[in-house]
Length: 393
Image (cartoon, rainbow, N blue to C red):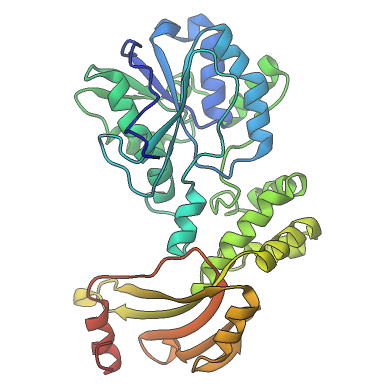
């Protein structure tokens, strides 16, 4: 079934003067809750407000439960418009192709948090993981690419303020966000206007809602695991929701099979974290998924391209799906491939023909769960020939 771009939006609604990005987490939830509970905190009527929420998938049930129980009834009581959207494919367009409207209501009763084409789908397809630092492209793709065409459609070419829940200690994030201002869009950061830090937000949530709002993030978010305190919180969440941990383990396993250096924790791995924390239920769910899912045999080649004038180079990759079947069948086919058979510290068996430690190239075969797509960078074969002296394939 073909889904028309932005099908499901209520086109009879007037253009809002304030659009708020709702990420379901503590900061944006408190920003919205205060507007509802304290009219003096805002300079607009609630009828002029639209909340937009991009569902990336892989959200904690604790977050979904808290928002469903505490916030959706408030939105309904105040007749606040909530638009829930998601991607239906990897790439979207400014016109809205690839974006699905899950719900557009002033009386929302549920969150469609499973999404459609999730961030996990994107990561598995590319056999990669979200990267720390930089532009947080995972958020740009899974949220921004879904929200931007929706916001453009509902504001109907009229000026609007775009409220984002950056708290007082996140000035660098709001400074970056202002770079996206246009003649129509003006970034606005109410929590910073109020001088509220995350601690203030947590205190307000307890006072108004009688409970805190759990952190909103994908179950495999490397940013959430980038500190010792963050990892402790992740472990606690995984104890309550072992399936969330199993999904994250699976994602890391697929990416790590293709590239051993890819893990969700710098200098370690999520697998090690979960083993060390004794999360046996999560590991059992993960192992069952490995045993029952479809597998493929992959050929992986990489070549390091030196940068110009001594600058940073790039690593180009060629990934080829050679066969697909059961886990046992792919293990048999891997055993028939050339190369040195090596079981890595991660427990994954690879047949290695070339190792970058002895040059600028990697060449290996590996069996791993299906999902990654055959793909190689433009110009790869020429670069491979230059680096190895081998003829073009």
